[in-house]
Length: 284
Image (cartoon, rainbow, N blue to C red):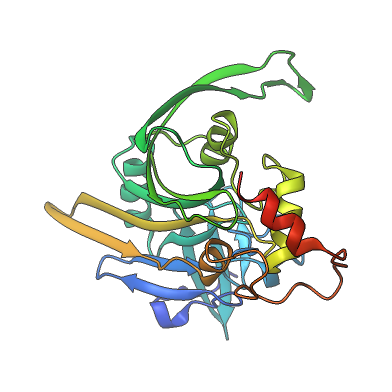
């Protein structure tokens, strides 16, 4: 017997650990603030405790489902963020608004702004990156050698480049296409890997940052999502913003020899004379 369904409201959402409601509207469009480390959706049984919502996930329909008593609730996942990425992520409380906004994403009509703390400062303070990224292609279960090249484009702007500490820069990134790991790969390709990125970043630099500040997360944050969309015969606007996490500031304000960041993680042994070494290294 099919469980009765109820029109889901924002206060019905079983938010994951640390997830915060940013805003919602009368159409059922919801923006949440996802912490770094949480998955957009569970990938396997038991993962629901570590995902955006503490609920089961239907991979075919791309929606969360959960029950309150005998009443079944649903929430559709409109877009995704990598687990290490924090910030704005969207849900829909009904299928109609889900289809509308997903169409906006597929035609690149949603404005997205990310912030990334990267190694070194771009020589040109603002511009765009155009790359052809490799996409794996399978024939059945067999990986086809060479794969497929797909275009990716991102606009960037240097927001801040602190001096005297780590050689880092805070970038504002505006992706014009939506490829898997696009921002992380493009930052790497242009010699500015995202700090804390364990897949595409600089392992030695990430380790240095973790030792000195205690910050181990990937420094990529979805700061703003906005759009103008047609729904039920009228035009509407939607905008959601998320503040830059404190971890970014902790790394940017680090100065060798000064305890201005977080205390180093207890499990990390800091070699003697580290501050003097850091002082020489970070002046380059």
